[in-house]
Image (cartoon, rainbow, N blue to C red; front, side, top):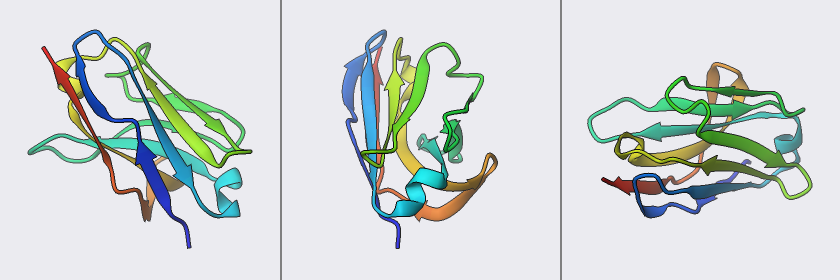
Length: 118
Protein backbone atom coordinates (compact mmCIF):
# COMPACT_ATOMS: atom_id res chain seq x y z
CA UNK A 1 0.00 0.00 0.00
CA UNK A 2 1.29 3.44 -0.96
CA UNK A 3 0.73 6.44 1.28
CA UNK A 4 1.50 10.01 0.26
CA UNK A 5 1.65 12.93 2.67
CA UNK A 6 1.95 16.49 1.39
CA UNK A 7 3.19 19.48 3.36
CA UNK A 8 4.39 23.02 2.82
CA UNK A 9 1.29 24.85 1.68
CA UNK A 10 0.16 28.16 3.10
CA UNK A 11 -0.70 31.77 2.42
CA UNK A 12 1.76 33.86 0.42
CA UNK A 13 1.67 37.18 -1.38
CA UNK A 14 1.83 37.35 -5.14
CA UNK A 15 5.43 37.14 -6.28
CA UNK A 16 6.41 35.01 -3.32
CA UNK A 17 7.61 31.42 -3.08
CA UNK A 18 6.61 28.18 -1.44
CA UNK A 19 8.10 24.70 -1.41
CA UNK A 20 5.81 21.72 -1.23
CA UNK A 21 6.95 18.28 -0.11
CA UNK A 22 5.38 14.89 -0.60
CA UNK A 23 6.66 11.99 1.47
CA UNK A 24 5.86 8.54 0.14
CA UNK A 25 5.84 5.12 1.73
CA UNK A 26 6.82 2.00 -0.17
CA UNK A 27 9.74 1.00 -2.35
CA UNK A 28 7.67 1.53 -5.50
CA UNK A 29 8.37 5.25 -5.18
CA UNK A 30 11.89 4.89 -6.52
CA UNK A 31 10.76 3.38 -9.82
CA UNK A 32 7.69 5.54 -10.31
CA UNK A 33 6.88 8.75 -12.06
CA UNK A 34 5.57 11.26 -9.54
CA UNK A 35 3.28 14.16 -10.26
CA UNK A 36 1.94 17.28 -8.63
CA UNK A 37 -1.65 18.16 -9.45
CA UNK A 38 -3.80 21.05 -8.33
CA UNK A 39 -7.49 21.77 -8.11
CA UNK A 40 -8.93 25.25 -7.80
CA UNK A 41 -12.53 25.83 -6.68
CA UNK A 42 -14.95 25.02 -9.46
CA UNK A 43 -12.23 23.65 -11.72
CA UNK A 44 -11.00 20.22 -12.69
CA UNK A 45 -7.86 18.78 -11.20
CA UNK A 46 -4.91 19.48 -13.49
CA UNK A 47 -1.37 18.16 -13.78
CA UNK A 48 1.17 20.82 -12.85
CA UNK A 49 4.46 18.94 -13.05
CA UNK A 50 5.78 15.42 -13.24
CA UNK A 51 9.16 13.77 -12.77
CA UNK A 52 10.25 10.33 -13.89
CA UNK A 53 12.19 7.87 -11.76
CA UNK A 54 15.42 9.08 -13.40
CA UNK A 55 14.64 12.78 -13.12
CA UNK A 56 13.12 13.70 -16.46
CA UNK A 57 10.61 16.49 -15.89
CA UNK A 58 7.52 17.85 -17.56
CA UNK A 59 5.52 20.99 -16.75
CA UNK A 60 2.21 22.56 -17.58
CA UNK A 61 2.65 25.65 -19.74
CA UNK A 62 1.15 27.83 -17.03
CA UNK A 63 4.00 27.09 -14.59
CA UNK A 64 7.02 26.68 -16.86
CA UNK A 65 9.89 28.84 -15.70
CA UNK A 66 8.31 29.39 -12.27
CA UNK A 67 7.90 25.92 -10.75
CA UNK A 68 10.54 23.22 -10.34
CA UNK A 69 9.81 19.60 -9.49
CA UNK A 70 12.53 17.45 -7.94
CA UNK A 71 12.87 14.21 -6.03
CA UNK A 72 15.10 12.60 -3.44
CA UNK A 73 14.82 8.85 -3.82
CA UNK A 74 16.84 8.26 -0.65
CA UNK A 75 14.13 10.09 1.29
CA UNK A 76 11.18 8.86 -0.79
CA UNK A 77 10.19 12.49 -1.24
CA UNK A 78 9.17 14.66 -4.17
CA UNK A 79 9.24 18.45 -4.03
CA UNK A 80 7.63 21.32 -5.85
CA UNK A 81 9.44 24.64 -5.63
CA UNK A 82 7.04 27.40 -6.61
CA UNK A 83 8.40 30.86 -7.37
CA UNK A 84 6.81 34.05 -8.70
CA UNK A 85 3.45 32.86 -7.46
CA UNK A 86 0.30 34.35 -8.94
CA UNK A 87 -3.25 34.53 -7.64
CA UNK A 88 -4.25 31.96 -10.26
CA UNK A 89 -1.93 29.44 -8.60
CA UNK A 90 -4.33 29.33 -5.65
CA UNK A 91 -5.54 25.73 -5.30
CA UNK A 92 -5.26 22.56 -3.31
CA UNK A 93 -2.11 20.76 -4.44
CA UNK A 94 -1.92 16.98 -4.49
CA UNK A 95 0.89 14.58 -5.24
CA UNK A 96 0.28 11.36 -7.10
CA UNK A 97 2.24 8.23 -7.89
CA UNK A 98 1.61 8.05 -11.63
CA UNK A 99 1.39 5.02 -13.86
CA UNK A 100 2.94 7.01 -16.74
CA UNK A 101 3.32 10.59 -17.94
CA UNK A 102 -0.39 11.03 -18.50
CA UNK A 103 -2.13 8.61 -16.16
CA UNK A 104 -2.49 9.18 -12.42
CA UNK A 105 -2.85 6.18 -10.15
CA UNK A 106 -5.36 5.77 -7.37
CA UNK A 107 -2.69 6.88 -4.89
CA UNK A 108 -3.27 10.48 -3.83
CA UNK A 109 -2.14 12.49 -0.86
CA UNK A 110 -4.58 14.45 1.28
CA UNK A 111 -3.68 17.71 -0.42
CA UNK A 112 -2.19 20.95 0.82
CA UNK A 113 -3.78 24.37 0.35
CA UNK A 114 -1.84 27.09 -1.43
CA UNK A 115 -3.36 30.56 -1.31
CA UNK A 116 -1.77 33.46 -3.16
CA UNK A 117 -3.02 36.90 -2.23
CA UNK A 118 -2.82 39.70 -4.76
